[in-house]
Image (cartoon, rainbow, N blue to C red; front, side, top):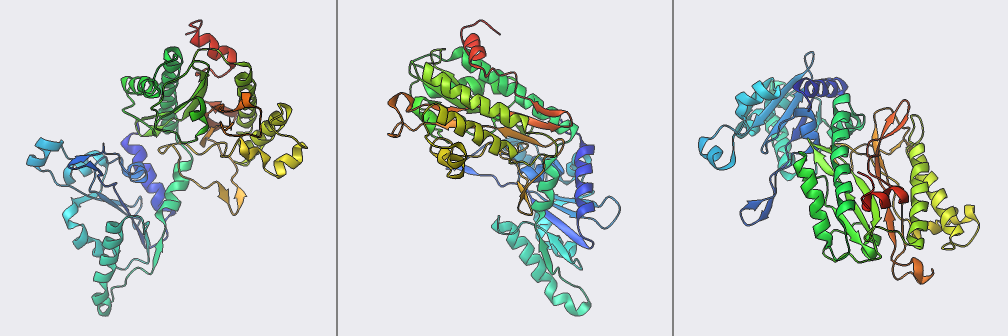
Length: 439
């Protein structure tokens, strides 16, 4: 788990990077209604949690870097016996200070009256405007409330700066504690993928296979998936974000499963493609081994100092050459790459940052150039091939085959660390596991 001292270090680092005479404001995620009076399970805003560790809605954090270490002020719900009977205990302002490290804490009902004082005589406000109407209203109201005090020498902020830019750069490089949680998240997701490979059989519904993942996630302490699970049997595997999961799995088809869990706020993200009946056909194996070769080459590019996009360019070259060798593309290799002929079969990037969010924050380009990889960054590597069932430009035997292979990789000083490596991904290893020959 992330201990209180680490949250404190994050806040201090944020405030050390803020401009003099500034203040930062960030709000908790709102609760969302699912239907009528039932709400979706609450999930805290990722950056709010990253800085505070506070799990409740109706909260606003204010950071004031005037003194050494800065001041962390939290506005939150008051304790309410009647509401706690129905919906569970609240920290209240006292708990915010005792348990979550707030230097000062106030009821959320006092935010609008106290915020003008916190903004008075400040030059800059770090806040992400335009995302939440209530946040915009609070800030606008506080600034407007200061206007009548100009004759008294009270000034208003003249600059509004994106808080996200600072926080996202902090979140991009993971601490030792974060990496430990991500390894555990990856391990739980890996167990789920192996369970699915042992369980799948012709006639099973896609949602029944999805249930195997959810069961394994929860029984190991990951209370939710990190994103909506994709279970695409046959041609459904050619739909990149297929989530209906409502078709039967057929003998002779592959099934593409993109599934990861969220463990103590940290995501894993794994994709495996395996045969419903336990054996790859000749065409399935040929395309599968091509995707695997591209993935291994791209993973090898995940090294300190390499541009982020080097892995993507590496995968494109391997995939294009392989598609040409198999007859799905025709032409000279460099020309096919230049013309992006591969996009008929491979139309997405080769990965993304991973962390508290499955598509985690952080710039991929710096000053228009691919960002150099640094130690303790975490990313996915996920090339694929998708031969649409209606692609009349290829032989019928290839049509409807969708394959993606995805792993989670930590950038280390010693090269790439694949934290999802325990899930089989060679043809031989997958078939052996599905046949019950390996654990």
